[in-house]
Structure formats: structure tokens, C-alpha cells
Length: 138
Length: 138
DNA sequence: TTACCTGCAAAGAGTTTGCAGGTAG
DNA sequence: CTACCTGCAAACTCTTTGCAGGTAA
Image (cartoon, rainbow over all chains, first blue to last red; front, side):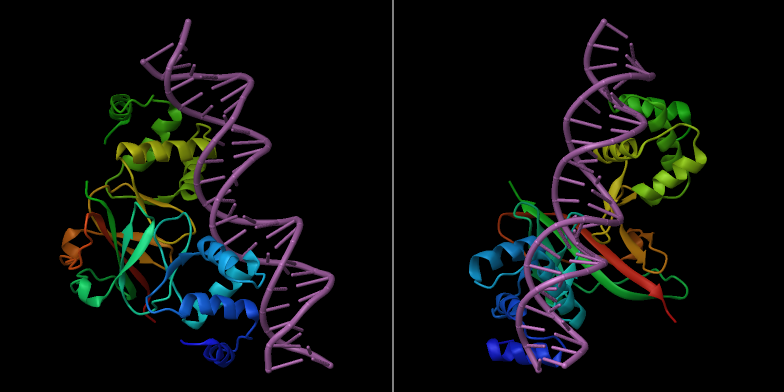
């Protein structure tokens, strides 16, 4: 996604109204080169600092869920503490840095093909997620 | 682990007192052939039905965490809703049945070797976890 | 104009904690 | 006897929800 007009267009074409809260969040999440990983409260903090628009916590939750439902965000499960989201919605895996509590993308090429040799009758594989936990080596 | 005396011994040697609550939980979790996956409230429900000892929710949390810390249980992260635990503490992966909300072990042989080709300076891999979500194929 | 959205506060779910009383060793 | 453990309730964190007022189209 690109500039503000693009976001307005994108939101509208998704059936979402282009409110200033959603535009501020879109700008923060998608107007960048690299993928972005965040938690709701992390996003909230950044919004407080970088945005003049007033945005409530409920709106952040609503918007993030709306974006997820539209396929603009992906949820990544790290632990039960809180939800992490990822602006990279392609099929990929993650490093989780336990020291910094931070996600790092592993693209398809970073992880060799994964073979699942067990089969459960009448069940289909919906997704295969690899989470590699890392920490300081010393 | 085996019978009640074994559990008393095991608890004591771990520096844990062999209270009747802990023995009841040990018996329920470890006195079985196959690995067992559970949530705290699921365990609570089984305890209510199968145990005469009175056990509070706080004690279940305390005990499960104590067992985890001692290495008798492993926590498995499925989603942010609640914590799942596994009596199989060996290195292995999981199916998660989205219809039944149930975990199924994938042993080492069920999953081909996983190659992580990306390296982060000064960081060491602590664990590699694969979660395969499955659902009814129809 | 009207359906949708926001902000607030309250409610919910899961988990943790403080403390008084109980019990293992 | 005493350190550790339990049960209870309150507290806490993250998330969701209800609703009145606001706003995009």
C-alpha cells in the first residue's frame, strides 16, 4: 500500500469507511518497506506518540481485527500472553527473540520444506507454522 | 511414573511435598500409557469428577506450574485463548484439531527434519516448534 | 440521512497473588 | 515445630461488548 489516497481507496474497496483512525493505523502499519510485527498495546503506544488523532483502545482492537479479517494482517501465536500481528500475510515462519520479545520473519527459503508424514483420516491440513525461539548465545 | 508410592517419591525428590492434591493430579496426569494434553479448566473438571479430595483452582495452577518448572510438563502454545499442557516432555510437534480443539502428538519421525537456513548473529536457537492445524476435510 | 464507526466504561475470560489457616515432614 | 501448601477472594491483564454520540458517504 502507498499514500493516504491509496489507503482511502483500499479501505473503501474493502467495505470499510475511511475514518481518520483507520487511516492513521493504515499509515503506521502499511506505509513502510519492511514487514512490521506488533501487539495491540505496542501499536497503541506508537499511535499515541505519532498521531494527533485521538484513538481509543477499543478502536485499535476493532481496526486490527477488521484488517485481519480482510486479509491485511496475520495473527502470529507466540505464547498465551498476548496476540502478535504481522503485516506480512504471505506464508512464512518466524524467529522469536526471547530477549527482545520480538518477531523476525523467516521466508520460505529460510526454512527447508516440511514433510508431515502422519495422516489423520477425514482431516485436512489447514496450516503449518514453525516458530523458532532464539536467545542470546552467551 | 507409576503408582502412588512412586509419586510420593518423585515429588519428594523434586523438593515438593506430597500433598493429596498433588498426588491426585499426578495420578491423573502421569498414571497413563499415552501422553495427555490438557488445559487448566479441563483438568479442573476431570479432577472434580474423579477425585474426592477438594482441590481449588489456585492449587491446580500452582501444581501445574510447579510440574512444568520441574520438567514434568511442557506448555504448548496454540493460540492466545488459554494455555495447553502436555505430559510428553520430549522434543516433538503437534497437530491441532480445530474442530475438536484437541492436540495430537507428532513424534520426531512424523515430521521430516527441519532446516533453518537463516542465522542471527549472537543468537542461538532454543527450540523449533511446528504446529500443524487440521480440520474436517469435507 | 443513515448505516457504520468511535470512545468510554463495564464486563468477561484466564491467570496470578495475598493471606489466614492447615499439614507434611 | 515450622516451612511449605491450600483455598478463598481479590486483583490483574488482555480482550470484548453495549451503548450513546459522532461521522463518512
